[in-house]
Length: 193
Image 1 (cartoon, rainbow, N blue to C red):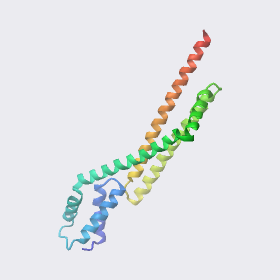
Image 2: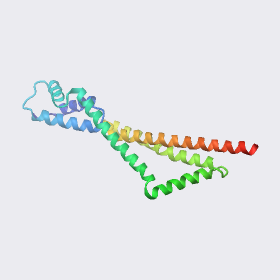
Image 3: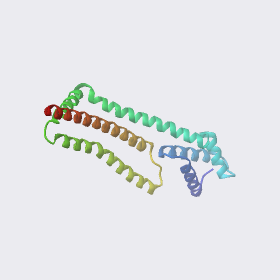
């Protein structure tokens, strides 16, 4: 059966209400369209849609499971890529740069205003990518609202990976700041005695 534009529009709306992500939307929409077009005749359009959804995807809960599994796999893959990138700083020549930067930062705190500038610069280096990613997600969301599309699993996974790295770096900065503050106060106490 060949579907007309009104029926295609109804299917787009129904599928859009069923799924959360763009990838799943495209997959489910294409599958339902091809399945309905291969049928000889359709008496009740809504019933035929529900049958295809139930038989091929396991209904609404099957689509939710499909999206959950796909989201978990993509998040795992992106997180693994981020950690592999992070580990490269502690292999080969990267470890020399990482250690020298750490030693420079530790001994640099003896220089006047070094701690202030270092804290500001690392704070900006940590916050700005997160900020730009948020702005990018906002504009992507606006663009997708115009097209009436769903958000992508990749966008969501990249955002959560950026937040994970942001939290890790901020925790390292706080620990470094506290250790240097303790060292500073110990020096003050020893000079008073």
